Length: 237
Length: 251
Image 1 (cartoon, each protein chain N blue to C red):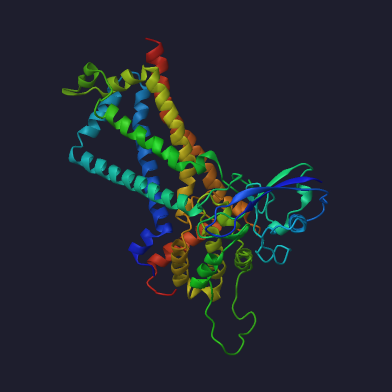
Image 2: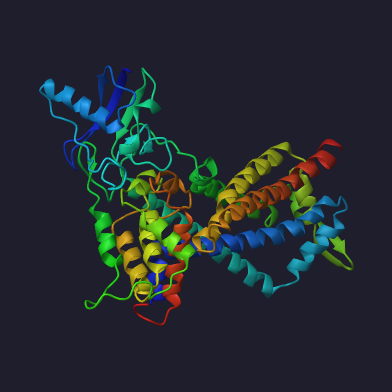
């Protein structure tokens, strides 16, 4: 028997929480991407209707938002705690540098730099929410623009997105960050199952392969939206 | 073959260390890496200087004493070997070889290339054993163990506690060592009665020693002279989760 409090504060416990929060974030991203696929329709009504639907959830939306902030917050705080212990454990570095031995190792830029890719994603996350939720980087006219969904007036989120992705600077920023998201998921996804003890000698390789697929599909799906809007509406107009 | 060797020299745990350059001529390519180190030490001693301190014992890959990081790789570039099983034919004439000790806070340098690995002993002592009653010898084959289970248990029992996993891990985590010891005992019927207490105490000791966390990079497994797989760490995570939900103190 291990008391729960002790278990969760142990090195293994922190990794269980890291894995569960990470997989929850992947779950959120899947739903987020599915909703955003509506942006591939050049008529903004579908996307704006979806956005209004989410807004109309009212208090439920706040509960979901607080939950997301909690999950992201846990993942971020644990990441800094784990990394600081990891850096301290090495002590002095290898004077001649370290080289991977290959073989069964998953040593790569992605697996070695989770904290770096994670911090880039954190900066992006704040920018992204400020941009599309609060219209911080939108022109005044677009930030205040409304549209009619049925008989009701609603925020024109589609216009806000299109305005951003007509600008190549935003497109480059989003594409760059999504490659970091891909790299983070490439190691993070399968790694979560390993941290939870869900893998064995038969499941490890398939999980690692699935991690690559998930990373490519998710990063590609998100990355395609700004590129598509830029090509169809930015360049074409 | 002629070699340039850059060897880590450090007087004690608190002293500052540095790489020291040496040249060695006419090294036989069929000599072992440690024999090459012996030759280097003879040369250094003939010059009236202090020999380089390094550890070795059995020199046949079963004791886990020798521990050198060769060109940034614990036990050199080959998979599944200890430092004593590295041969000079793996190198070319004119090569420069960098030789360093294991680097981890819980493995302080005693002198030069020798580190104190007693942190491993303390992890082992915390729970890496089976309590047995004295008395008559039990009948052979009285306890049935499936062949595949005993094979995996034996694969984990092959761990020689050299610490290459810690040296190779970018986080200096001792997860592979600890999980190998936990796996070996938890898989066998004799080890099951103490499995919860064992994993709890060993993980606690591992954390207290100051080792880093496992980031599932798997470099430990690549460096392991006994090829302990990364799935061993997954088993430790399961054992720990099992101990969290177990209603019993020991098992």
